[in-house]
Amino acid sequence: MRISKEPEVRKREIADNAMRLFCEKGYEATSMKDIAKAVNVVPGLCYNYFKSKYELYEFAIALYANECLAPLIEILQTEEESLDAFYEKIVAAFIRNDGKEKYHDFFHKDGNQLFHKQLEIVMNDKIQPYIENFIACLNKKGQLKVEDPKSASRFIVYGQSPIVNDDTLTPEEKAEKVMSMIKLILK
Image 1 (tube, rainbow, N blue to C red):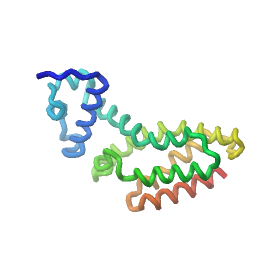
Image 2: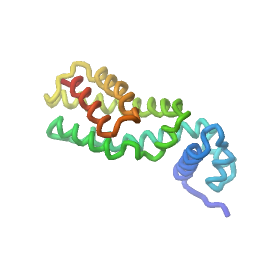
Image 3: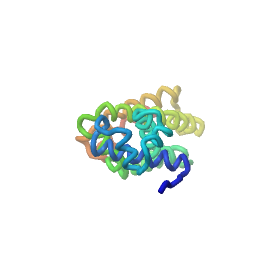
Image 4: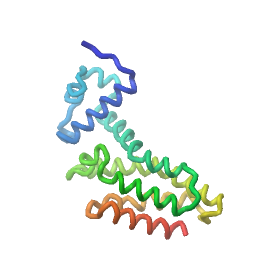
């Protein structure tokens, strides 16, 4: 019996199952046929939404990046009284979520470094404008005096990646190292 679903619901279902299979079997070993079977649909339906497995993967990465970044973006868009209050909220959100992300195991699995780098680029590109706007807003409030918010935000976003992705550090150690660097940059 065929179950009709809204297109966005179906796309999400296909993407979630694809990522689950990529985690279990690996990206290369997973076919669109495998994904369709996991969703309990015919392969043609998957191709109706995604032209290829790679397009499906890109869609799943974008969804995942949005989910991972949502708590940080929410914090960056709030009105706080002090810069320290922002720092505290960002650190708490990072520590609460680090390593517990939905597809963490896939992206951190040995041999999946290229996939992890792709995710890192997508996430950094998505968060950078929010950081830039955050710095510009704090400049207007007189809490910061950063001459070039765009360059500062790029340096912060792309510079923190090696620390955040260092699995030899605890979430607390990562947060402390990144925040100490951010405080130096935003002096």
